[in-house]
Image (cartoon, rainbow, N blue to C red; front, side, top):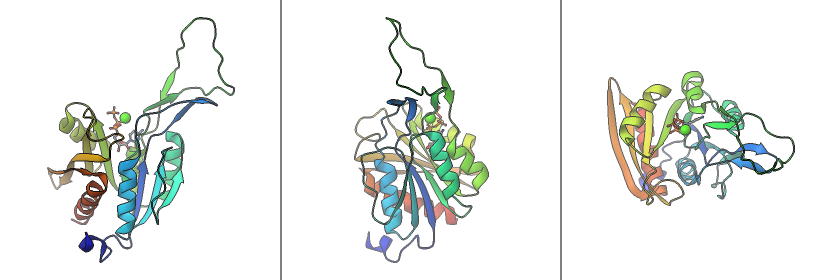
Length: 226
Ligand code: CTP
Ligand code: CA
Protein backbone atom coordinates (compact mmCIF):
# COMPACT_ATOMS: atom_id res chain seq x y z
CA UNK A 1 0.00 0.00 0.00
CA UNK A 2 2.73 2.47 0.96
CA UNK A 3 4.60 1.83 -2.31
CA UNK A 4 1.42 2.63 -4.17
CA UNK A 5 0.77 5.98 -2.49
CA UNK A 6 4.44 7.09 -2.25
CA UNK A 7 5.59 8.18 -4.75
CA UNK A 8 2.23 9.42 -6.02
CA UNK A 9 1.84 7.05 -8.97
CA UNK A 10 -0.86 9.10 -10.73
CA UNK A 11 0.60 12.58 -10.21
CA UNK A 12 -0.17 14.86 -13.16
CA UNK A 13 -3.03 12.68 -14.40
CA UNK A 14 -6.69 13.73 -14.67
CA UNK A 15 -9.23 10.99 -13.97
CA UNK A 16 -12.92 11.43 -14.77
CA UNK A 17 -15.12 8.82 -13.08
CA UNK A 18 -18.88 8.35 -13.34
CA UNK A 19 -20.64 6.59 -10.49
CA UNK A 20 -24.02 5.63 -9.10
CA UNK A 21 -27.33 5.32 -10.91
CA UNK A 22 -28.94 7.88 -13.16
CA UNK A 23 -32.55 8.73 -12.36
CA UNK A 24 -34.99 9.56 -15.12
CA UNK A 25 -37.96 11.77 -14.29
CA UNK A 26 -41.53 10.68 -14.98
CA UNK A 27 -43.12 13.75 -13.38
CA UNK A 28 -41.99 16.25 -10.68
CA UNK A 29 -42.16 13.61 -7.91
CA UNK A 30 -41.44 10.29 -9.65
CA UNK A 31 -38.54 8.70 -11.47
CA UNK A 32 -37.07 5.50 -12.92
CA UNK A 33 -33.89 4.36 -11.19
CA UNK A 34 -31.73 1.29 -10.54
CA UNK A 35 -29.96 -0.44 -7.66
CA UNK A 36 -26.46 1.02 -8.11
CA UNK A 37 -25.03 2.21 -4.76
CA UNK A 38 -22.09 4.12 -6.26
CA UNK A 39 -19.63 2.38 -3.92
CA UNK A 40 -17.33 1.02 -6.64
CA UNK A 41 -17.00 4.33 -8.47
CA UNK A 42 -16.47 6.25 -5.22
CA UNK A 43 -13.77 3.77 -4.16
CA UNK A 44 -11.96 4.28 -7.49
CA UNK A 45 -12.26 8.07 -7.13
CA UNK A 46 -10.90 8.01 -3.58
CA UNK A 47 -7.97 5.74 -4.42
CA UNK A 48 -7.08 7.63 -7.60
CA UNK A 49 -6.99 10.90 -5.61
CA UNK A 50 -4.85 9.29 -2.91
CA UNK A 51 -2.48 8.11 -5.65
CA UNK A 52 -2.07 11.74 -6.76
CA UNK A 53 -4.52 12.14 -9.65
CA UNK A 54 -6.75 15.15 -10.11
CA UNK A 55 -10.17 13.49 -9.90
CA UNK A 56 -13.56 14.61 -11.23
CA UNK A 57 -16.34 12.36 -9.93
CA UNK A 58 -19.60 12.72 -11.85
CA UNK A 59 -22.22 11.11 -9.68
CA UNK A 60 -25.87 10.21 -9.81
CA UNK A 61 -27.90 10.39 -6.56
CA UNK A 62 -26.22 8.20 -3.91
CA UNK A 63 -25.90 8.16 -0.12
CA UNK A 64 -22.14 8.65 -0.05
CA UNK A 65 -19.95 11.61 0.93
CA UNK A 66 -17.54 12.98 -1.67
CA UNK A 67 -14.10 11.43 -1.01
CA UNK A 68 -11.42 13.80 0.28
CA UNK A 69 -9.71 15.79 -2.45
CA UNK A 70 -12.18 14.77 -5.16
CA UNK A 71 -14.18 17.28 -7.22
CA UNK A 72 -17.71 15.87 -7.26
CA UNK A 73 -20.32 17.00 -9.79
CA UNK A 74 -23.82 15.78 -8.87
CA UNK A 75 -26.21 14.94 -11.71
CA UNK A 76 -29.52 13.15 -12.09
CA UNK A 77 -30.34 11.98 -15.61
CA UNK A 78 -28.19 10.32 -18.26
CA UNK A 79 -28.41 13.47 -20.37
CA UNK A 80 -27.09 15.69 -17.55
CA UNK A 81 -24.37 13.11 -16.85
CA UNK A 82 -23.32 13.21 -20.52
CA UNK A 83 -23.17 17.02 -20.36
CA UNK A 84 -20.95 16.95 -17.28
CA UNK A 85 -18.64 14.35 -18.86
CA UNK A 86 -18.35 16.41 -22.06
CA UNK A 87 -17.36 19.47 -20.02
CA UNK A 88 -14.82 17.64 -17.82
CA UNK A 89 -12.99 15.24 -20.11
CA UNK A 90 -10.01 15.99 -22.34
CA UNK A 91 -7.94 13.81 -24.66
CA UNK A 92 -5.39 13.34 -21.87
CA UNK A 93 -7.94 12.12 -19.29
CA UNK A 94 -8.50 8.64 -18.02
CA UNK A 95 -12.26 7.99 -18.13
CA UNK A 96 -13.69 5.27 -15.90
CA UNK A 97 -17.37 4.71 -16.65
CA UNK A 98 -18.64 3.11 -13.49
CA UNK A 99 -22.15 4.60 -13.48
CA UNK A 100 -25.21 2.43 -14.02
CA UNK A 101 -26.63 4.73 -16.69
CA UNK A 102 -30.32 4.18 -17.38
CA UNK A 103 -30.71 2.79 -20.89
CA UNK A 104 -34.11 4.46 -21.29
CA UNK A 105 -35.97 7.52 -20.06
CA UNK A 106 -39.64 8.46 -20.25
CA UNK A 107 -40.25 10.05 -23.62
CA UNK A 108 -42.28 12.84 -22.03
CA UNK A 109 -41.89 14.27 -18.54
CA UNK A 110 -45.21 15.50 -17.10
CA UNK A 111 -45.11 19.14 -15.88
CA UNK A 112 -47.46 18.39 -12.99
CA UNK A 113 -47.79 15.36 -10.73
CA UNK A 114 -49.68 12.73 -12.69
CA UNK A 115 -53.11 11.82 -11.37
CA UNK A 116 -54.66 8.36 -11.38
CA UNK A 117 -57.39 7.89 -13.93
CA UNK A 118 -60.14 5.36 -13.22
CA UNK A 119 -59.13 1.74 -12.61
CA UNK A 120 -56.87 1.45 -15.64
CA UNK A 121 -53.18 0.60 -15.74
CA UNK A 122 -50.61 2.98 -17.16
CA UNK A 123 -48.23 2.68 -20.07
CA UNK A 124 -45.16 4.93 -20.08
CA UNK A 125 -43.38 5.32 -23.39
CA UNK A 126 -39.57 5.15 -23.09
CA UNK A 127 -36.88 6.49 -25.36
CA UNK A 128 -33.22 5.45 -25.45
CA UNK A 129 -30.61 7.50 -23.58
CA UNK A 130 -27.30 8.56 -25.13
CA UNK A 131 -24.39 6.16 -24.54
CA UNK A 132 -21.89 8.24 -22.55
CA UNK A 133 -19.04 5.74 -22.72
CA UNK A 134 -19.45 5.31 -26.47
CA UNK A 135 -19.30 9.08 -26.90
CA UNK A 136 -16.13 9.27 -24.79
CA UNK A 137 -14.49 6.42 -26.71
CA UNK A 138 -15.34 7.83 -30.14
CA UNK A 139 -15.05 11.57 -29.60
CA UNK A 140 -12.92 12.53 -26.59
CA UNK A 141 -9.61 10.77 -27.17
CA UNK A 142 -9.47 9.85 -23.47
CA UNK A 143 -8.32 6.42 -22.29
CA UNK A 144 -11.69 4.74 -21.61
CA UNK A 145 -12.48 1.97 -19.17
CA UNK A 146 -15.98 0.48 -19.09
CA UNK A 147 -17.87 -1.72 -16.70
CA UNK A 148 -20.22 -4.50 -17.70
CA UNK A 149 -22.79 -5.62 -15.19
CA UNK A 150 -24.12 -8.94 -16.42
CA UNK A 151 -26.29 -11.68 -14.97
CA UNK A 152 -25.29 -14.38 -17.51
CA UNK A 153 -22.56 -15.22 -20.11
CA UNK A 154 -20.45 -12.66 -18.26
CA UNK A 155 -17.13 -12.85 -20.12
CA UNK A 156 -18.68 -13.33 -23.57
CA UNK A 157 -21.03 -10.32 -23.17
CA UNK A 158 -18.26 -8.18 -21.67
CA UNK A 159 -15.82 -8.84 -24.52
CA UNK A 160 -18.54 -8.09 -27.08
CA UNK A 161 -19.28 -4.84 -25.24
CA UNK A 162 -15.62 -3.83 -25.36
CA UNK A 163 -15.65 -4.28 -29.16
CA UNK A 164 -18.98 -2.54 -29.64
CA UNK A 165 -17.99 0.53 -27.65
CA UNK A 166 -14.48 0.71 -29.08
CA UNK A 167 -12.76 0.79 -25.68
CA UNK A 168 -9.45 -0.72 -24.56
CA UNK A 169 -10.59 -2.15 -21.26
CA UNK A 170 -13.74 -3.50 -19.63
CA UNK A 171 -14.42 -4.75 -16.11
CA UNK A 172 -17.07 -7.42 -15.93
CA UNK A 173 -18.98 -8.23 -12.80
CA UNK A 174 -21.63 -10.81 -12.22
CA UNK A 175 -24.54 -8.96 -10.65
CA UNK A 176 -26.65 -12.11 -10.35
CA UNK A 177 -24.58 -13.02 -7.28
CA UNK A 178 -25.69 -11.40 -4.06
CA UNK A 179 -22.29 -11.45 -2.31
CA UNK A 180 -20.62 -9.05 -4.76
CA UNK A 181 -21.52 -6.15 -7.03
CA UNK A 182 -24.56 -3.87 -6.71
CA UNK A 183 -24.91 -2.33 -3.21
CA UNK A 184 -22.33 -4.66 -1.63
CA UNK A 185 -19.06 -3.68 0.05
CA UNK A 186 -17.21 -6.38 -1.85
CA UNK A 187 -16.64 -6.94 -5.53
CA UNK A 188 -14.99 -9.38 -7.91
CA UNK A 189 -14.01 -8.25 -11.40
CA UNK A 190 -12.90 -10.03 -14.52
CA UNK A 191 -11.02 -7.38 -16.47
CA UNK A 192 -10.51 -7.74 -20.22
CA UNK A 193 -8.14 -5.50 -22.13
CA UNK A 194 -6.68 -5.22 -25.57
CA UNK A 195 -2.97 -5.86 -26.00
CA UNK A 196 -2.07 -5.46 -29.69
CA UNK A 197 -4.18 -8.12 -31.44
CA UNK A 198 -4.90 -10.11 -28.29
CA UNK A 199 -7.48 -9.78 -25.56
CA UNK A 200 -5.91 -10.37 -22.17
CA UNK A 201 -7.72 -10.98 -18.94
CA UNK A 202 -7.03 -10.48 -15.24
CA UNK A 203 -9.19 -11.31 -12.24
CA UNK A 204 -9.40 -8.87 -9.33
CA UNK A 205 -10.87 -9.89 -5.96
CA UNK A 206 -13.18 -10.98 -4.48
CA UNK A 207 -12.22 -8.29 -2.01
CA UNK A 208 -13.37 -5.08 -0.39
CA UNK A 209 -14.17 -2.45 -3.04
CA UNK A 210 -11.29 -0.28 -1.78
CA UNK A 211 -8.79 -3.05 -2.49
CA UNK A 212 -10.42 -3.86 -5.83
CA UNK A 213 -10.18 -0.15 -6.74
CA UNK A 214 -6.49 -0.04 -5.87
CA UNK A 215 -5.64 -3.08 -7.99
CA UNK A 216 -7.80 -1.85 -10.86
CA UNK A 217 -6.11 1.57 -10.85
CA UNK A 218 -2.70 -0.07 -11.06
CA UNK A 219 -3.86 -2.24 -13.96
CA UNK A 220 -5.39 0.74 -15.81
CA UNK A 221 -2.18 2.71 -15.36
CA UNK A 222 -0.07 -0.20 -16.63
CA UNK A 223 -2.23 -0.89 -19.70
CA UNK A 224 -2.50 2.81 -20.54
CA UNK A 225 1.27 3.24 -20.48
CA UNK A 226 2.04 0.06 -22.46
N1 CTP B 1 -22.90 3.23 -20.32
C1 CTP B 1 -22.92 4.59 -20.61
N2 CTP B 1 -24.05 5.16 -21.11
C2 CTP B 1 -25.17 4.43 -21.32
C3 CTP B 1 -25.17 3.04 -21.01
C4 CTP B 1 -24.01 2.47 -20.51
O1 CTP B 1 -21.90 5.26 -20.43
N3 CTP B 1 -26.26 5.01 -21.80
C5 CTP B 1 -21.65 2.63 -19.83
C6 CTP B 1 -21.68 2.09 -18.42
O2 CTP B 1 -21.24 3.07 -17.49
C7 CTP B 1 -20.71 0.93 -18.49
C8 CTP B 1 -20.83 0.45 -19.92
O3 CTP B 1 -21.37 1.52 -20.66
O4 CTP B 1 -19.37 1.34 -18.29
C9 CTP B 1 -21.65 -0.77 -20.11
O5 CTP B 1 -22.94 -0.58 -19.56
P1 CTP B 1 -24.00 -1.74 -19.67
O6 CTP B 1 -25.30 -1.28 -19.11
O7 CTP B 1 -23.38 -3.00 -19.10
O8 CTP B 1 -24.08 -1.92 -21.26
P2 CTP B 1 -25.08 -1.40 -22.34
O9 CTP B 1 -24.26 -0.95 -23.50
O10 CTP B 1 -26.06 -0.43 -21.80
O11 CTP B 1 -25.83 -2.74 -22.79
P3 CTP B 1 -26.92 -3.64 -22.00
O12 CTP B 1 -27.40 -2.86 -20.80
O13 CTP B 1 -27.97 -3.89 -23.01
O14 CTP B 1 -26.20 -4.91 -21.58
CA1 CA C 1 -27.32 -0.78 -19.89
